[in-house]
Every structure is written in C-alpha cells, then in structure tokens.
Image (cartoon, rainbow, N blue to C red; front, side):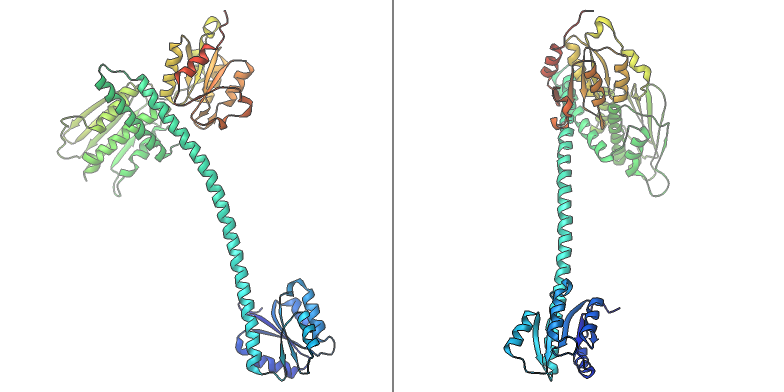
Length: 481
C-alpha cells in the first residue's frame, strides 16, 4: 500500500526508456510514481489506485493519448484528474484544441526539459493536495456545523423546558409565601412582621437547599448525609449518625432540612466544626414526636449566647411555627446540645387512611376533595374552602392516596394540583369526569401542560386567588340528601 500522505502520479508510455526518464526526473518530488507501458495497463492502474496526475505520451500503439484521455474523463472518479500530454511530434493548433477538449491541462514537448516537467507536475500535485485538504476541512466544517446546529436545537429545547420549570417553581414559591402570610397570626404588628420575615427567609433557604441537593424522596438519612457532607474530615469522622431511615412528609422535610442546615452552619462558625477537637453525635428514634438529638462535644469555652442569633431563630421558626414542634437548646461546657421535637412529620400513609375521610349522604354534598403536595398551599386552600362552609377530604399530597380516598369517599367537587412531585393527576381527573363530579385544576405551570380532553376544565393558577376558589364552590350544585 502506498503512503496515504503521498500523491499518486501515473506515468504512461510504451517506451521503457522514457518511463525511466520520467521516473528519474520526478522522483525528487517525493510522490508515488506508478508506471504503465500501455493504455490498457494505464486503465488497470486507474482502477486500482487513486491517481491525481496522469503524464502520458500522445502516440501509443494500442490507444493513443487522446483516446485514453477520453476514457479517463468518462469515469466519474477521474473527471477532475490532471492530464499532461507528452508529445515528440509537432502538434497543430487543432491537436491542442482536441486535447484540451478531452481534458488535458497541459502539454510537454519531447525531449523533455527536466526542470519544466518537474515544475508542471509539481503544480498539479500541489493543487490536488490542497483540493483534498479543502474537501476534508469542508467535510469537518459541515460535521461541526451540523453538530452545533443540533446542540443549539437541544439547548433551545432545554431552555424552553427550563424557563417553564423556573416559572413553575417561582409560582409555587410565591404560593407558599402567600400561604405563610395568610396563615400567620401574632398579637402585634411587630411580631407578625417578624414571623413573616422569618418564614419567608426559611422558605427561600429551604428551596435553595432542596434545589442544590436534588434528593429523591424525603429520606431523613439522605437529608442528614447531604447536610453534613461538607463538614466530613479527612481523618477520623467528625460526626456519628445513628437512627432508622424514616420517610418524612414533603413539607416536614423542607423544614427539617433547613433546621439541620442552620445547625451545621452554626457549628461551622462557633461549634464542633470550627474546633479541631470538636465532634458531633446526631441521632433520632422512631417515635411520635420524632426527636432529633444534635449533641456537640470537644468544643472549648462554650458560652451560651446573650441573645438568639438569626440561625437559632430560623430553627425555632421552622420547627415550632411551621411544624408545631419544640426546640430545646442547652449550651454545655463542651458544646451545644439541641433536641428537635417534631410531631406528625412521618409519612405513614396506609390504605386505611382514605377511610378516615369517608363521608356520605348530605355531608358529601358539602365535601371537597383537595389534592396538593405543597402543605402550606394545601392549608391555605383548605382554609378558603372551610370558610365557604364546605368540609375537606384530604388534603392528599400523592396520587396513590388520593386515588384510594376517592374510592371510598363521596364528594361534591375537587381541587387537584396537576403535578404531584412529577406524577400527573390526570388518572384521578378521569375518574371525576366519569362520575360527573366538578373539579378545578391547580398549577404553577401554564395551560400548555393541560391535555386536550380537559380543555373545558378551569385552572387555578398559583399564587392562588381566593375568589377563583370561591366562585368554583359557589357553582357546585347542592343535592338534597
């Protein structure tokens, strides 16, 4: 096989002495020289090799150079091949014209002048090499353009999806903030403002934490590991974690992850993670209330704060205000001991749960099925429903428990969050359609998420507008029991 970087030059002449002369003259070009002593042999070489330049005698016994040139040009592979004629006889102007018409690019008169022959062949060899290089570069450019075009298409699609998801998350965050404002109570304006600011700050931090960690599900072990991972030392472990793996309710998981985040941040500033000898023992047991014990040791000169810092206030607001739990802080000589008491934060959904909200007869005419996985939003919508004189079945945070509930519950209407942690509520909506039960969709997404078969169902956009819920409830027909 020839060197792929070299250019193949075909030398065609029926006289061996001339072929030897051409070879000697052209060997200094460093290209691959292929010889043929007849037109038929030349055709064979053309079929076997990729020829860039053909140097041929005009006068040959079987086929003359003009005939051979015509045959070469008829082959698609050699329509652009450079053909140089060598002639020892005087050619007329008509011969030159015929040769050019048949594809000749140049003529050389015999006896050949070595420098002239070498220069002419080199010109076409270099031209062929640059043409091939340009074709290669064009091919690579086309591939890159196609790949880049595909990347841009995918990027645009992702940007569209991302924009929708950001819009959804923003609306959900606003809905939760709205719920905090509506549900918070205090004796004074100042206390109310403090409570609102604390909860909104906790909400923002919790959402950022959950977004960064991307944990799937609400495993307490997963939350603990992700919160403490940045503080794991290179040597002996700086903390010990023990406790059964329990599944937390979505809203509880947000508050607990935020509280642990604040404890870890405070430990990094003032406690066990800021001191070389500091240790942390974190444990919990399966009980109600769930007790999470945060016990630091090895901290030098621990002093209780003269006033509660922002992080401690955040922990109290998350656990006590939002979850109805209790926080116990004890600053011992060697570090902080903190116990978080958290009632009703475990997800213990069972089929029997659906039966607890079963109603019948006249009560069913005033019961609304509520399905929403954001607990504060659910509480706010529930408050709106109850204020209108209805009772609530739920609220349910997952599709499975909502499906179980509707299997044993008669309701007058329903309000359904479209997306339940990535699961569509449409199967439940189909059941409501079959039963001719009016319902309202609730979502932070746009209407494009709605399937065509539900095009006539109204949508309650987040943040929630109370008058939309009130209007929906006012239109529900009351059937005498």
